[in-house]
Amino acid sequence: MTITIALPSKGRMKDDCSAIFERAGLKIYAVGNDRSYRGRVEGWDDVEIAFLSASEISRELGNGSIDFGVTGEDLVREGLAEADRRVEFCARLGFGHADVVVAVPEIWLDVDTMADLVDVAADFRARHGRRLAIATKYWRLTQQFFSSQHGIQLYRIVESLGATEGAPASGSADIIVDITSTGSTLRANHLKVLSDGVILRSEACLVRARKDAHADTPAVNAIVEAVRSVL
Ligand SMILES: Nc1ncnc2c1ncn2[C@@H]1O[C@H](COP(=O)(O)OP(=O)(O)OP(=O)(O)O)[C@@H](O)[C@H]1O
Ligand SMILES: O=P(O)(O)OC[C@H]1O[C@H](OP(=O)(O)OP(=O)(O)O)[C@H](O)[C@@H]1O
Image 1 (tube, helix red, strand yellow):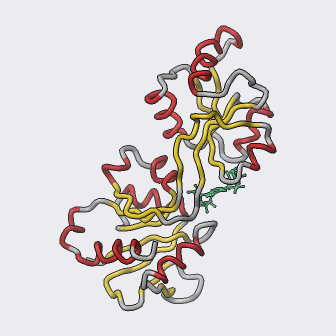
Image 2 (spheres, helix red, strand yellow):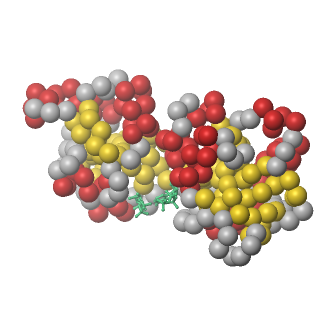
Image 3 (cartoon, protein in one colour):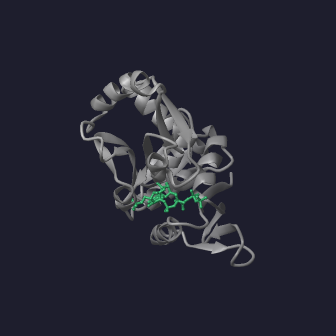
């Protein structure tokens, strides 16, 4: 079978990703011209490369139209229900680090932990006449963390399409769930991460879509071993 590997075509993960593949002996060249979204790997005739955005890669892993993808764990776990059943995280690549966190306004002096937030959420309707509003683009991870792990049911998710950290100040939400890497965006918006509010420590991963045919395809294992050998 032909194995398709999707790699980031742009953005913060692109360059680190090509460097790792090159070190692993998987030298990629574009098919057609430099702006082409297809590539091949020198010496690996049964492998083709698709260049997609990090979020598209998580979607294509879910629908099985690619065999491998390099993308952030956060995007895979947010994009796919039951991610571990549908994909395998084969290697953590050591770049693209970002934590998905719960952050609240710094002026909430009495709120430092998820247990404190459980109390806030329980009282919120009585005090404010509405449910606690959480701005996020990570609604699946938020629901799992709040409802399943912490038993918080009384909240409302406000879907954010960007600038999530601004939501508490603008009044569109009370708290946020978003990614942070250096922490400077949270600080600039006077938000603090709860001490046990890290939902996921994400980084770029080599991810395999689970397919029965992979068991009979030696190149699948060879790709994983080649990448692991340079980490
Ligand atoms: N400071 C950061 N800001 C945003 N994403 C980061 C950061 N650091 C690491 N990442 C990771 O990078 C990935 C997102 O990369 P990028 O923004 O390039 O992709 P994308 O969402 O496909 O791009 P676009 O939003 O332009 O379509 C996520 O897995 C995220 O966790
Ligand atoms: O902790 P920090 O280092 O401040 O990084 C975190 C911020 O970076 C990202 O936004 P970015 O402006 O990169 O744009 P994006 O949301 O389009 O990825 C992310 O959404 C956070 O807002």
